[in-house]
Amino acid sequence: MSNAESAAAEEVRLFLVAGEHSGDALGAKLIAALRNRLGDRLRLAGVGGAGMEAEGVFASDFPMSDVAVMGPLSILRHLPRIMRRVYATVDSALRCDPHAVVIIDSPEFTHPIAKRIRKRRPEIPIIDYVSPSVWAWRPGRARKMRPYVDHILGILPFEPEAHVRLGGPPCSYVGHSLIERLDWLRELDAEPLRTRLGLNPARPVVVVLPGSRSSEVGRLIEPFGDTLRRLIERGVEPEVVVPCVPHVRAMIERGRRTWPVPAHIVEGEEDKFRAFKLASAALAASGTVTLELALAGVPMVVAYRVDPIAAPFLRRLIKAPTTVLANLVLGENAFPEFHQEKSSPENLAGALAPLLSDTPERRAQLAALARVPDLMHIESGSPSEAAADIVLDYALKSKSRA
Image (cartoon, helix red, strand yellow):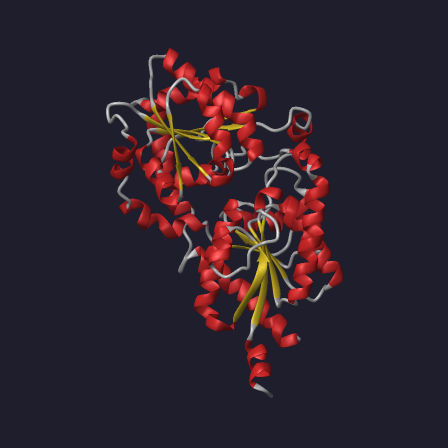
């Protein structure tokens, strides 16, 4: 065997697909953990963003913003473009001839890819990192995933039981990526951000999080601004910090011009969590960020809006008692949420105002927040390492059969 043939025999080839910023961050951490185990034997290809590219996945042929859409009508409007990206990604995956494929979140984009890879190359194992919200709505999806997903890496502790109950693929709880950063978060000094932004220490800080997708921001930026106006009418004038990802910054910049108070926009993980540490409370779009806020100990009010035409269908499909991840982890609705027309500025301000001072509502949320880290605990190692072990097990078994 030549040196080139020997090197090829030692390679472990993986194809990873992420469709939005949060998935890119998970993918980057997973790659780092895999490289710790495989070193130079690891060969990567796939679709991702800046984080995965920095860890060795070649730059994608298209930006993630092309496929990072949310809600049935948004998906329908962009369906031709999304499907072009799906077919291009499938072709790229098959050219790579991977020992395993990892799809990361964004099921509207990643699951059509997985189905097509399974149809054309059924021997390639497919691992899904982050379960679709089958426990919240459309539970029949769990059983439908079995033919094309070999294993799910769950980031919420109740997900393995949910997939057993719903007939889904095998699922392992690997932990949420933030729990490996809890020590870092506790030690993070937030005061440099307060100084840099010139925040008045006598005023409460409200972190406003209208979403990481343009569709979310478009629906929430105006009512969130009106919520701040209602707070001022109640005699509360907060300092406002808006952590955001780069691809929605321009939308937020435009939207905040009509807000009644200055809003400081920050980017990057460190400044986001510094803002969380400074915050008295958060006004947030429903999503992963609610779990980040919970692990950071920030009281919150949550809003969720989808296309008005799609809303009646979603109401019939949603089966969970809450859409807030932190509530689901706790098993109780500790953090108020408002959907569609109920997410009015009056309702949001009415729930947010008591969280900005020492009130029974604030104390109740703080008590609930204190329970979240223990509920998210994993036995050993980090979430990225636990996920890497499962991915590597499938890849090596696939390689041995080749």
